[in-house]
Image (cartoon, rainbow, N blue to C red):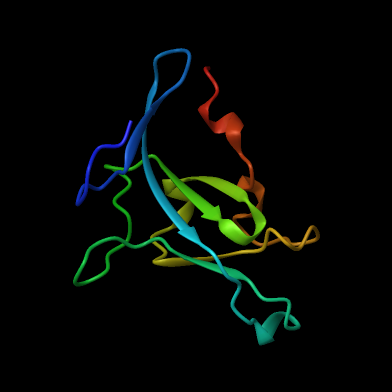
Length: 115
């Protein structure tokens, strides 16, 4: 259910057990060059919010960051606390050998499972 503009979360998701998750949705469509990692490139997602001074997502208001990588048609469902206050994160869906911090959340749909 979309909530509207200028709120800390974009939508709410309810699982089959009735648990509600506050979701922030971000996306990226193209890869940036990454010389430090052999030129493979990475997808950068801005995880900050706010129109003037960008601030880290407030994890008291958001449970999960859903990051969509359009070129790869891949979703990352990342618990807010795993962002560690970062304002940008790099994602590597095109690299199956990546050990980057957030790769374990690629297509992480089990995060919404009823427990």
